[in-house]
Image 1 (tube, one colour):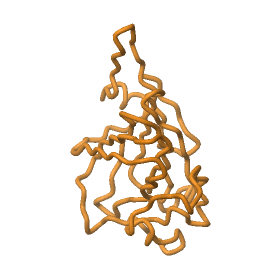
Image 2 (image 1 turned 45 degrees about the horizontal axis):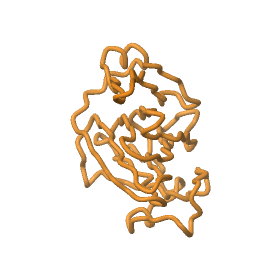
Image 3 (image 1 turned 45 degrees about the vertical axis):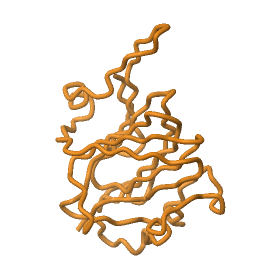
Image 4 (image 1 turned 120 degrees about the vertical axis):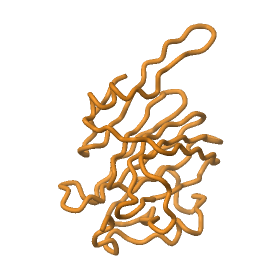
Length: 184
């Protein structure tokens, strides 16, 4: 696997090696030893989630506050998305900044997002199947949503806002300014 540092400390783009022939391909999508050696992180993955969405869906920007925060390892099993991670770590030099990458079944790229980030994605293909491991169980009481269109963060989504498909929860997200200490 190839581990690529991003412009935000702790977030890694991961490119697994694919071994293919006329039958298809084989790829190791996670190896704890390689992951820990490259990133310095050693999450204890406790839950894996899958979602399916159609073109134009924007999910996020979600996070869990306090002790319920989660690190994530995300990838796409079908289709393509733009994946976004927003730094919400108090005192971070990159607080409020985001990184985004196109993840697809074709490119096989994965993104590691440590605790302390809001996360979301938009679907670029007709359908996308999204998989992610987390290192903490889902806790509804700790769930928070940063506005997908927060002006301070300024995520450059590819889908125009009037064509986005959003959940009622995501439309009611709060601004970065309303999150004085999101992980307290």
